[in-house]
Image (cartoon, helix red, strand yellow):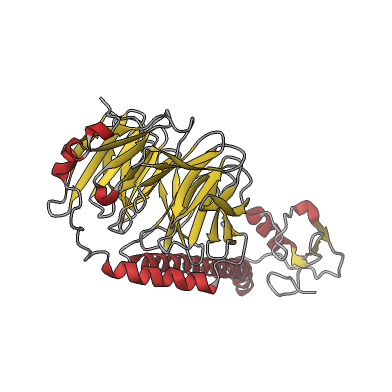
Length: 487
């Protein structure tokens, strides 16, 4: 029998009840007194757990003094025992330290790999957005986005790419069209015409500048085409049960959504397609710059793309919050949706991946992309401020105090003027690229729920709470005998 600590034959052998190992009694007692554990299994051990073994013992002579060789040998033996015990303890600690170091190095390596992957994904998203001078932050919050269908078809993807390539090349060099409204002209704008109340509870307005017609829908599900020239409803359609939540023109076709979750498409007043992709209210619609892709967002936390050429659902994506408003980037490669979680979520149109999230102060009520391709205006519920986001910096670069709650926002074609409207009135803000500063060429007390720019921005059309369309423009440009003037 050999001692597990010293490796020598023990004089007084004892066995551990925990590990069954043989030890020299004095060595194991010293180890227990210092560590309180079994040196082999590292379990808690006390002297009561030691069992003395009966063996033939050799009687030791009386301890000699240190002046003799036997006494010196005894001292050396004691020192050797202490050294053997210390060496054994050090070996145990070294083994444990190696294991801890190996685990720490593995965790560090895994953390470095995760950080590298996240950084790469962030850089890829920024690179994709930088093609139109747009950047974003990587998504880090909320539940994972779920794609409910395979995604856009190859034909639609090609159409998105072609539209982006065509529009992004000419955007920054595009001149202001001849006859476009100026800041001085806006200074002279005032209410020049107001229609009779059209539809009670109306909250959406869409203008077709080619036919001087406006879409207005009411809370009873009725949708009408109002002729600005004839000053009357010239066509009426039934959008379905519930109130009309939004409407837009897709070329000469009309698209309307309702609070019951229905979307209907009309051509010459006849329904040609309908969809019921949302479980609940369809909060907003948006049309892709190509004119062939329709988007809808709903309170069911999803957005859906539709192929208008085939009247089919192209893809449906679930998000982490109810959505309230939507808009396509002017180049068509990005889609933005505002949510009740105070976030503006920006998605890649082709892949439906979340490219960026912008945090606001409350549920998003309105968003509008500027035609310069780099700015996004947004308004939040309960706030009187409009945030101008620079997508390249993923930050607010300007805030406009509208002094009252905001219902709608609309940039005009050149990206110079932003119309801001609400229950307390209308404000138009101008950004001068040469002076790099903002100004306010127009402020009117016309309360409205929605706003649209007229042809060449020569007029502004507002929808008030009564369901009437109020037109603002230079008074001299209108024939008073042919208009219902607003005092």
